[in-house]
Length: 294
Image 1 (spheres, rainbow, N blue to C red):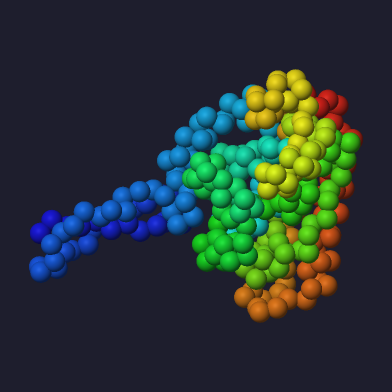
Image 2 (image 1 turned 45 degrees about the horizontal axis):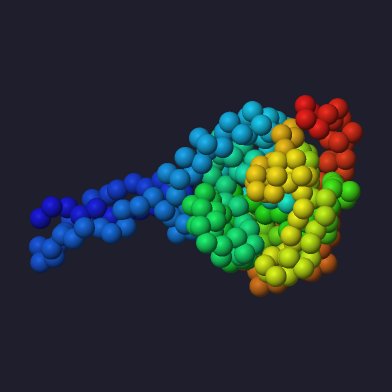
């Protein structure tokens, strides 16, 4: 009988290798319906590669992203990446994911609110390009079991929903859940300070009634809408120059996979990371000469 192929996932999501399996004499060979590069999270390396090709000109020529300390991101093993968050439709997530994948050759899974996964078309595209619903169990599997890089924004929608007048003022990092996830998974946290995202799509006003009607965290009126019009301005960011600084990884001397961790220690660690990020952002802003040219 002709050998049937089965798929095995490698450490690189979406990269599949086919190994032959001998078909028993009494078993008829059947076509394998799983011939796809989509992994269990919905990420497709084919789609991700296409997205990288399309996004790279925007990354290099529109945002002109520059990194400092990129070597601090582990080249192997799991790590939880955290960063400050901003923009009505934030540009920081794709910039970070694209930069790390291009420069280090490591895939990055972006943890986002379940709202994105539930949106028609958008949710599917987000999953195909590496988006994962932000849930502790998902993060644990990615970090602990699969030793991947996962990206989270502890500010959540409180960061992206800031008005322009409040730019670069980091919001609370919730209850420190991201720290507990890293402790439980036994991986370091790698903070990244981002400058440029606040000016890419600044929010001038918010319309609470529309947000309530649509069931979304906020309904923004951005400067982009005033310049480019309501439709184009909803998706086209300004060409603000992005600078990203990777801080020293934070390691925790606690055993992984514990049922509970000290809440005070978790909160203290989360606040310490927030303070370090805020201080670094202010230093970067002081050194910046121009929003557009850096």
